[in-house]
Image 1: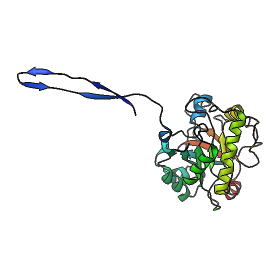
Image 2: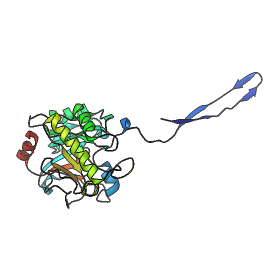
Image 3: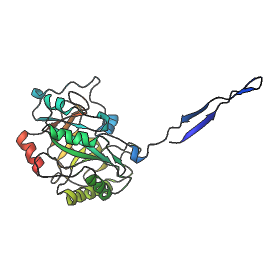
Length: 273
């Protein structure tokens, strides 16, 4: 990090004694390099679209909603108490693995393996930075750093987090056609590397603005949609139904609160491909 150095020298002459004091370094704000970034799923959606209410989100209450309760976490949650999350009702989890081509979640192993060890179905996700490198490069980085998949019935397909640019232009300076092409390149490469197309995480507002009808992914990619409200609302172009709904940014479980659109048997089928 760049710094300014302020030199303050206090010199007091006490006979032959000279006292010199204090060199203080003051940080200068600058954009974090890609390798230092850690943006969790929904961080920019909440910033741009709001939390959906003005009070702290209520705890997830399974009887209120149909579906399987779950969660997603990143390094912001640190070492997760997976036993408690399981006891509270969470049955699946997505864990952030990577961002761009320079960031790896330092808590990934504890979070990814810990969720599996307590019995959850779990998967990894990648926060996309489409203006930093192409979709193929970011899919390779993700697949090599936690974004794999196995047909064990406990591993969800890797997820691609597409949301507002943390650093600038909402759509990363790309046209709808270019953004659709970027997502297609990521999806195709991840399929080559893992045998599964990615789950796509996004919000309806961002996707319709930045991808729109330029490309459709509903035939290959499950939809994980973020909308912080008690009613889901319209879905992004290209999908007829959601597979996962991120409906709260906080609540009973660590991280974001999610609902799988189905029962445990259907969740197993998604994991098995």
